Amino acid sequence: MRRVIKFLTTSLFFAAFPIGISLLMRLINKAATPSSIYAPDILFMALMIGVTVSNDINEDVKEFSDNVLLQLTKTVLTLSIMLVAVLYGGYIQDSLSSLPNSPLRDVITNIAIVITAILTLISVAVELFIARIQAATQAVTKP
Image (tube, rainbow, N blue to C red; front, side, top):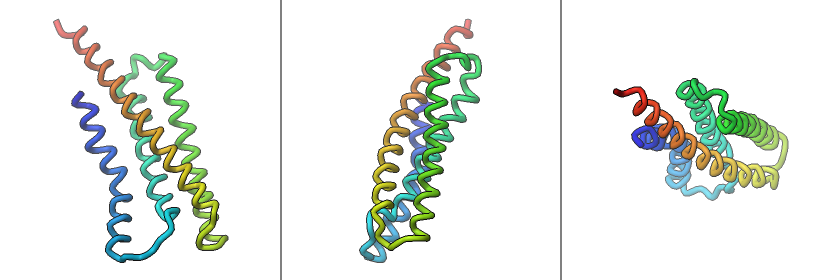
C-alpha cells in the first residue's frame, strides 16, 4: 500500500503540476481562453503516468516478465504513449498552421482527457498489482 501512496503523491502530483500552474496563471490573468489550450499539459500528464508505470513494470517485477497480463499492460501503455506523442504533434502542427480556435484542438483535448483518465486508472491498478506481488514475494522469502 505504501507503494501506491508513493505513486499517487509523487508521480500523479508532479504529472498534474503543469496543469495546476497553467490554471493558476490563467486565473491570475483573468484571460478568456479556449479549453483546448490545456491539451499539452494534459498530454504531458498522460505521458508522465504512462512512462512511470511502464518503467515500474520493467524494473520491479522482472521475475514475472513472462506474465501475459503484464505483457499486455506494457503493450497498452506503450501504444498509449505513442498515441500521446502523435496527438501532441498534431496539436502543435494545428496550432502553427490554422486558426486560433480550431475544432481539431478541441477534439485533441477531449481525446487527451480520456487517455489521461484511462492511463491513470490503469496505472493505479498496475501499482496495486505490483505492490501485491512484492508483498507476496517478501512473505515467501521471509522465514
